[in-house]
Image (spheres, rainbow, N blue to C red):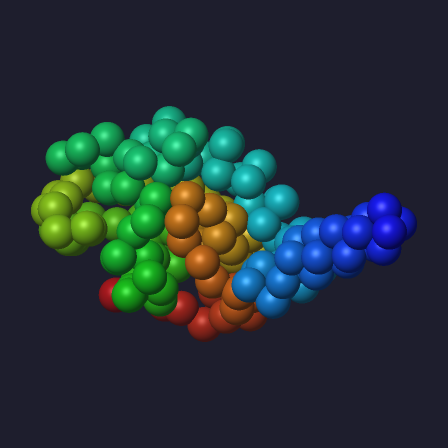
Length: 138
């Protein structure tokens, strides 16, 4: 009787821990996210902070960012070429300058994959260096 009970418990734990609700990330996306974390720490952390929350009224949040979700191409462009002018993020206006960081297309793709999958942001689509290379300044 105890053995059957244990088998049922193990079975339930196994299937509850392997539910289809978990985000499935490809090895390529996972590697890009890992590389992007390093890029973020070296280039983005000082302004957007370790938690991605930015500094209110100065540097916009990347955490749970509606701008990032709704303006992926513009976000990639800003990461690649910098940004100047007014943007609205999570219903707050930001009007500052983000200087270009001089990142390669690979570094931009990696950091965008990291940002797009951190701090309540979810994007299972891999952003590639080829995709980044096609984005031109405005």
